[in-house]
Length: 121
Image (cartoon, rainbow, N blue to C red; front, side, top):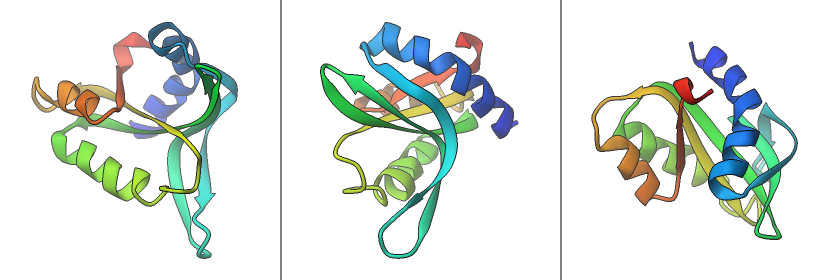
């Protein structure tokens, strides 16, 4: 389910990010392993380059079939935390089919993460 969700996100996110945030995706979004500088690599479900307000940003995202607050916290710690300093500016994105409770989307947005649902694709 996760790979299917990501595959759909790669196609739909460029238009959605531009519409909602003015973020212009440059090139393609993809799945990749990012070098951490210590010989280790971090798998990133959604990775790409873009421009936001004239600034270059790295789009970093993850997909979860059912997104919870714990998933948001894990994304912040295990993905974004490990990538701190790897890119000058990161634009975080989470994609999901549904959330575990009504407040999850707002919780993620309060943390600065864009959230998209599969039905928007």
